[in-house]
Structure formats: structure tokens, C-alpha cells
Length: 208
Image 1 (cartoon, helix red, strand yellow):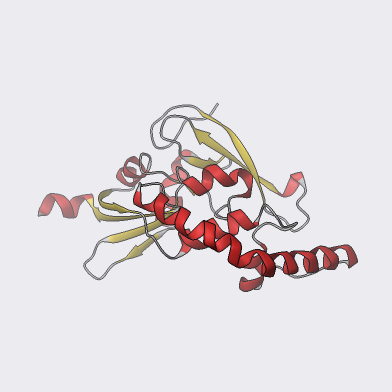
Image 2 (cartoon, rainbow, N blue to C red; image 1 turned 60 degrees about the vertical axis):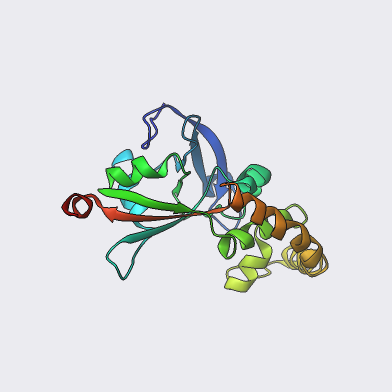
């Protein structure tokens, strides 16, 4: 049993994320979860590589600080969606939480100065798509079509694609009327889908 890179507690199997177009078990990524800090992490990610995985979310700000934008595993939408949570992506190896992000950042030599949950943007899109996933054959159908990563394949695939397109068009507005206020409330109570942290290099903080 592996240990959580954030708090050291044991990790347990969480779910599988499809990483291939055919969705077979061999094309799935196993994710594990920590019961203490609720971090979600790929089973294939070595603890020594968790720092580089976290830094993959980092963007340098004009004042020299670093901004991290991550999918919040402790969010309302993650709890509602489970394996259908729209933020689940094959290339995403870490799903931090407000509890796990500070120690992960510290291991990367950073000090978290701000934590917030945007009321608009990706969190809203993820909540909307998570709820739509309950009605479609394809996961993240609308987001995938918009990004150009999802296209109809075989005859059966084209039929499912067409059905999903019709369902998405018909359900888009009714779902949005529910998902938008739900995500807004979630963000206000600290359980929004997107977690944004602003951090400073630890050595910079000591010099101030």
C-alpha cells in the first residue's frame, strides 16, 4: 500500500479514468485517494514525482509569485460526479484539496499565501458537464467536441454521437439553470470545483 505524498497516510483505490478511445481496462488510469487529506493521485505516480506533477499546474505571475489552478477533489461536483466528474483527465495525475495543497507546495519549496475558489470559469464548466454526463454515452461530450478531441467513429459510434449531440442541445440550458447556482454556492462555502492557490518560493518569503 502506497503512502499519500501530502500527509503520509495510506492511499486506497479510488477509480479508473479512461485514457484510450476504446475505453478498455488496459487503457485506464488507476487513481488512488487519501482518506485524511482527500488527495487524489495516480497510482503510477511515484512520490518523488509528485512535485513535478504539481509544478505542471504552475504559472508565473508578474509579481514573481506562482499561481496554481487545480481540480478540487473535495468539491461538490467531484462528490456528485464520481467517475463521471468532468475534471477527470488521463493526463492529470494530481487532484489536490485545500488540505493537501499546502504540504504538496511545501515539498516543492513553495509557501501558499492565498487559496480561493473562482465562481466562474472552469469550475462552472466542469459542474455543467458533470451533470450532463449523466445523460450522454460519451464522457465530457460537449467539452470534447468543442476542443476537437471527440469525433464520431464507426456506424454505432456515429449513432451514439448523434444522440449525445441532441441530448446536449436539449439539456444544455435546463442543466445550466441548476449547475450554475449550485457551483456558485459550492465556491462560496469553499467546495468549488476549481481550487486556485497563489504561492511564493519559500526562500523569497524568508527574505521579506
